[in-house]
Image (tube, rainbow, N blue to C red; front, side):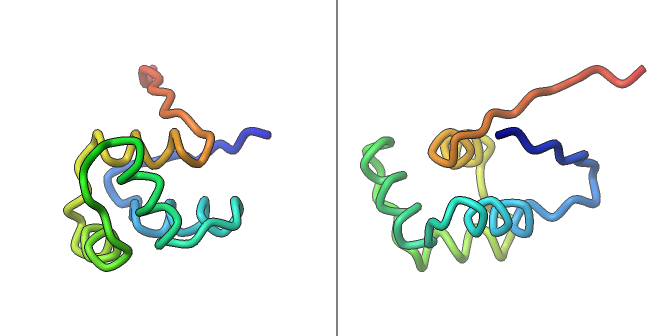
Length: 79
């Protein structure tokens, strides 16, 4: 099942990720656990939530989250 989200500079990544977490029935705590397991870095629900709320999520962390949720980022050239 695919989902298309048109993203521009006004898009709130926090809202997009929360929507995808809801659709996949995964909590922030479970996401943090899986991120820690796959990356070898320590993530908690508290520091992950803070990163999302304060727009401090790194691109590689976003890619990891999308991978965990079963999505990929597909960049397309604007024409």
